[in-house]
Amino acid sequence: MIKRFVVVMVCWATVLTVGVVAGQGRADAARCPDVEVMFARGTVETAPPVGLTGLAFSDALRRDLPGKSVSVWGVPYKATARFSDRRYVAQTAIDGINMIQQRMTRIAAACPHTSIVLGGYSQGAVVTTYATSSTRLRLPERYERQLTGLPQVLPRSVADHVAAVILLGAPSDRWMRDVGTPPLRVGIPYRSKTYRYCIPGDTICNGAGVGRPNALHVLYGPGPVSDAAAHFAAQRIR
Image (cartoon, rainbow, N blue to C red; front, top):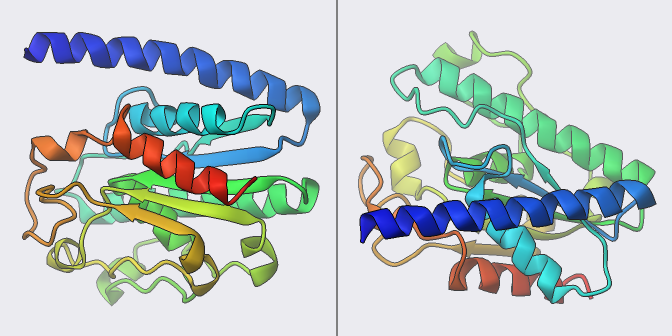
């Protein structure tokens, strides 16, 4: 059963990667796509930089938006599993936040009619949420002294270009508190267009104490969750 599951996932990754690459080609030719998906993958997730979950979501979104060009950009941050080095993890997350914010600002200015869809899975949902924050990210002083490029709050004029924010398997407040980082709070301009989903029993997002993810945490890829998330985003773009 496990071997069969792995084979299915690899096949999905191959099919979806081809779809995303084709979509990116169409978007680049048009310069400004109808939709720009910016997705941050989960910890060491396969199919970087988008990740298998991001590929499944973007493929589902493309099916829900026939006739529209959908460009997909995977946040090229580390998505590291070096959790024993908290300073390193924090810096790589900050780098990812800045990448998202810089691209949002650039797309909003260069392509004012493009609908931006932000997305993230697991660790990627942390990075995406912090990118939308309405307040400056504050970390314990001992970490802030060692970190560079702490992100700023984006202006409302940029937020207005975001059609949807998709957060899948985002760590709970308790999980974030246990690891000593601020809770996840989507910024005010984004809250009404945010889809946040936690599979019941997923110990990363259901309020359990910090620990390794269970088997449920890897079920946000191809299937009903990514389909529902895509439908949510599509309704805000049509």
